[in-house]
Length: 222
Length: 386
Image (cartoon, rainbow over all chains, first blue to last red; front, side):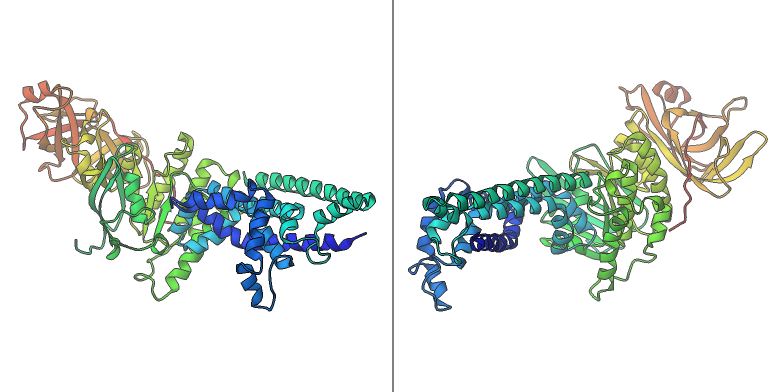
């Protein structure tokens, strides 16, 4: 039983989800509230991974993260040569690749709140930050839940980008989907079955849990 | 634009096809109603006072503090206001108690800071007082989605009061409610009016509401102020649209001075005379608003001696729109100053132009006003709690 790719995958997905919640929330807030004309252009860039072939994204990431791109310069700060084919590079790639799955539900949730609760908060002496923390965030909770689950699950399942920028280094960049691919290539059907079946059950549980939770949250609200 | 102790509002803006040019002053006490048809700019004015909307080029001061001068403006959360929206807009993720406390906690913190504007509001209301006044005790632990429309709006009013406002802004707080909930809330608003130490700006397009609650009226029409002044003055001015409404009438501020248990009548005194009304209206010295419809008032030269009409009041004619009148000159309005010298409260009478001519009426004439019926706004709610 190869636990290594499983552990690596879960670590990657957890770190990616946390980073996405931190940087995705202000982006989603800005997309939901800004009246800038170029807002939709930013939204399109965020949503790009939805339609871009993963190999295309992976190719450009490889250039950016490689020794001659900004990633190489960044890696040089701690004595590395490149961010490509490293776990850190994988995190960066996953964050970009899974961003729309986190930002979009949160943005929708912020937009659904509307102007009124924030106006009420302002008339009750809450500063904009205070209103964001005590009104907008709690009211957008279902959006955060959906975004986190989708971002996590999507990172777990990614393949094309990982293959392009991470390769297949056991313990560093060999995630589940790549491991399954490797087993199939090597005709190790039993191993492939275990991992693939595990993924199937995992995915089912994730989707099921999300739907149940959303329903319960929705009921306590209305 | 001198700093006054009241509220000074000057707003001017082009909002697309709509032009707003509003200037009025409201006293530092009592309820000032912004009254006009939908789309006349009432809500925009209120939102600007709250700071929720910003129109550059405006000027706003409240109790001597400048809230806006051109583009310099105080952000809404630093203005000591309470705002009641048309829809209660309670926070759905908080229970009733936490909704009520949301503003109070922040206001207490803000008032404790040295930069707080002015001294703390005298008699800032306490949690228990508000809960008692608005009848919220049994609702405190409830989740807001399970409240009725009237209950929600009461919580919203309580929440606004507890944020220690120096000015209460109410944007048609009854308009989104059904009739039963409206009747349930009105007595609370009246009690509030009697006991509140801060001024209220009350936006409404409902004349009945305004007549029950307002002291001062600002009449708005398509973005401009048509007239502003004490409610009775605006009501009795025949040149203004209120007097031309079919249900035109005036409010008299009366006090109960006696009961006649034998006949079951109550005596109500007001500035310039007394009225007798059927039934027991309230305890001695309680205040009630009486509404007298212009078409229920007739004018005679001499006091009627043999008449079933209870109320025949000496008065002088102090104004009229005769001979032009309304309904193509069929009816004319007579403004009566009550009392033998006409120095008391005003009454509006609507009579035919024929009667005006036959009686040979003219400005300054001494006449008698016969009042056929009086509508009273009862006060059921305990007042003086705050």
